[in-house]
Length: 125
View (cartoon, rainbow, N blue to C red):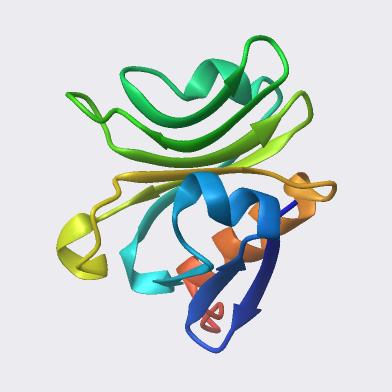
């Protein structure tokens, strides 16, 4: 399972050895400024759609890149458990992905932390 950490102004994602085979990446670092939306999804297997390059075990797991031919290009590592779903601004990231979808045991809390970080500190009235 991918490890997700917030470091300064970035969300750092480190893939496990098994995930690296299918995502063809050891890690991804996304600037908070590039995150348009962060959501927690209960059925992440439904989020990944379109042509793909990676592992698909129907009804159980998807790991790799989805949306290869058309649609949003998604970096995916999901199983049948809640996931973090990030919608990105490709112009800011300079990467090839429009979305990142990752199953995580604490997806809801992680989503909240990212939303707060993207909004920035509250300013007093």
